[in-house]
Amino acid sequence: MKLDSPIFQDADAARIHLEAQRWPHGPNCPHCGNANPDRITKMEGKAHRPGLYNCMECREQFTVTVGTVFERSKIALNKWLLATFLMASSKKGMSAHQLHRMLGVTYKTAWFMAHRIREAMAEDVKSSGPLGGEGKIVEADETYIGRVDRDYLSPQRKGQPRLKRKMKPKRTVIGLVERGGKARMVHVQHATKAVVRDILVRNADRNSTLYTDQSKLYTVTGEEYASHKTTNHSAGEYVRYEDGASIHSNRLRTCSRSSSAAWSACTSIAAKLTCTATLPSSISATIAAPRLRSPTPNATTSCLP
Image (cartoon, rainbow, N blue to C red; front, side):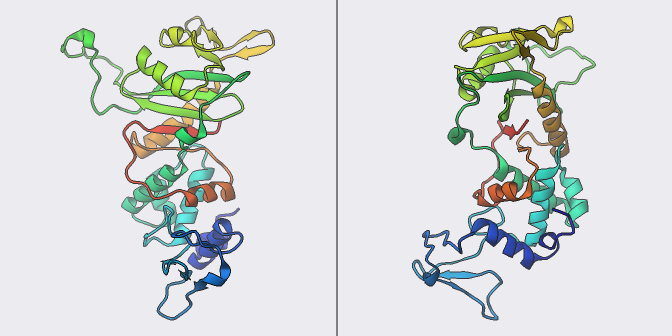
């Protein structure tokens, strides 16, 4: 797929492409689910906008964008399609400023589009189930990116302010990746044993083998899994071979760098990223997602390693 493709240049071509993607067997009414072609009429009058259909079952009108993130938007459909393609195929993410320059829209518009697309591409963790399983390996690690809005003070300090230091406090992100599968990254206010355990047991099957570093965040929770193996980063050990298996949590570092780049570009803890690279599947998944309101503060990021 090239950037000079007609679906990225012409709104009508973009609409026809989306109709073929979403309705491969003909239009379906998003209001009542009617798919009978004899009971759906295409409105082609001079007063009707392009792509408008009328359902004779529920008497409602609809277009291909109804029920998607593109609904009720005055932005040209070809620009939506191009923005989706750019964000889905960009390895390190795509900033709103870059979209603003490439699409020829205002920065506010690009920011709005980026948030809608990311929200639509986010994985539904509740329905997709946990990572790993019997005989599978899940890597876990934490990373620190961006700048925090408000510094975290440990209860042990009893209200005393933190001493000045060279390193500025950053946002804490807990990451999980299933080898040969997907990855999830969750923003937390502060990483503690209780917080890390809650994330692990909710997102990783306890029949999995868990690979981490020797951080004390994972020592107790690791005992709940089928097996828990670690590498000693403080001693310069980042990978170890044992019975033909490579023990490490390095796959997570690639996903962390990609998410860090996208996070910095968006400057928002609610930004969500799904790392995909093919246009048809990514656009189909995006346009099928319903319109959602502002993301929650604890954003769960999902990407393919």
